[in-house]
Length: 182
Length: 100
Image (tube, rainbow over all chains, first blue to last red; front, side):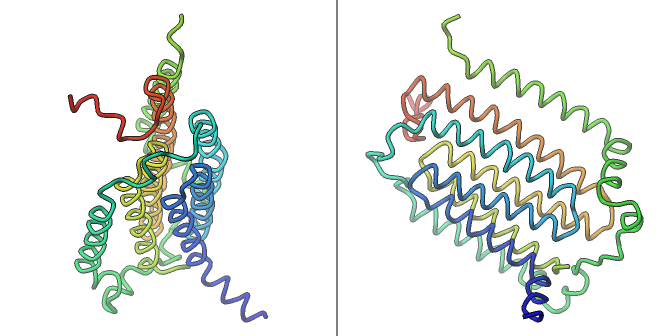
């Protein structure tokens, strides 16, 4: 039992990653749009778990707040606003689905072919392994502190530009979605 | 701590599922969700490389990508709602005004 728990703890990232893949597959394959949103929610929650597993605590919590808390609810609202008839007359998938799947499969094969040595080769295994000791001041500062130093000191200008972009997007969304009666 | 290979592989698979979803679905909402999934896969890569290099730049950039994704969703969903008012449908097959 303890052994099993230890194994689960060691492979937590793999478990969360497989959950994310499963959620993404549900999202793409589901016929009902609400089921798609639920698959999206599962994928986002599992991604938050992945972030936590690779030592980005702040990003994990931000993922939970932004995606699971905000974006999924927004999607659900729009699905319920828009999706009146569940049964579409022309089917869920595009006509050219086989071609697209073949193309995506070819992309996967090509990527794996090119990066075969990087991903599976023994020579690259050590160089790419995440080394926990590499984070120099991170261990004693903590993830959120370190991130805030980066964000508010080194990358202050992009951060401010991002806030302006968010404001523009807010105004744009209101303008786009309002009715034209006024 | 997982190995870098695993992180890269999972992120790549998520990205390709997103690409496949954008290519094969007709529903605009699901296409938007697939775009979000692709952004998330890129975020996972950024965070993994930030961890790998021991700096914070990747995480800061991933946070900015997250904010941009939120803005994108807001505008995209507003466009979907406006489109639904106009066309009474959210299938991408109906959006063919540019085709003439």
